[in-house]
Structure formats: structure tokens, C-alpha cells
Image (cartoon, rainbow, N blue to C red):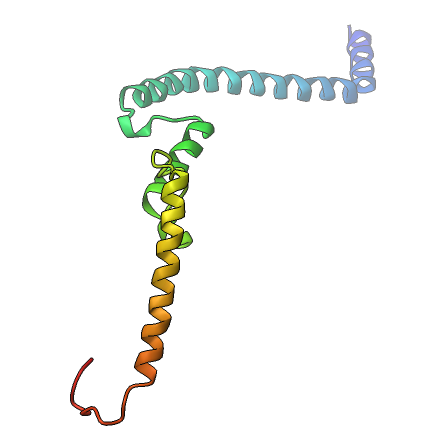
Length: 139
């Protein structure tokens, strides 16, 4: 019997590195599996609870829109509120309902010419004002 013990010891000593390596791998796998099971046992119910909580407490203002809808909304908002500050004029899309006719455009151009000539003659008359006027009078 003592010879059997000696043989077992020699065999164990010969395979000791291999056996220790297998034991370490087994230990790591057991720890990994326990971690996965515990993570799933805690994570799945917690994740469902968070998801349900978020779904039940979504505000109406938190509704998401597509980027195309946002671009359209922003373009309209900018045109309605801020375009005049930067362009200094109203956009053509705002007054598309009023298209001038040929008669109206010719009348407008003649009225503009008359106004510009009267402005120049008025400006000329103010520069050639006589020196005899009182300094206290306001024109």
C-alpha cells in the first residue's frame, strides 16, 4: 500500500502544474457564471422597472419629432419672428397674394419718379434759402 501512495504522489507531482491550471480556469468560470446570474437577477427586474417608470412619466413636451418636421417648424418660426431684423424687408412668400398688375406697376413707377423729382427740388430750395430769415424760425 505504501508503494501505491508513492506512485500516486509521483503522478500528482508530475501533473501538478496542469491540475493547478485546470483548477484556476474552473474557479474563474464559476465566478463568471455566478456574476452573470446575479447580474441578470438584479439587472432584468431593475431595467424593467426603470423602463416602465419612464413610460408612465413621459411628459407631453418630451415628444420627439423628426428632423424634417423640426426644420420646417424652425424655418417658419424664423420667418415669422426674426427675418425682418436681418433682411430689413418682408419676404416674397409673405405677400404672394398681392401681385401688381402692369398698370399698377407703371403708375407706381411714375409716382416714384414724381416723388424723387419733388424731393430734389425741395432739397435744392432748402439749400438756397435766403439769408434774411430769422434764426429762430423753424421750417
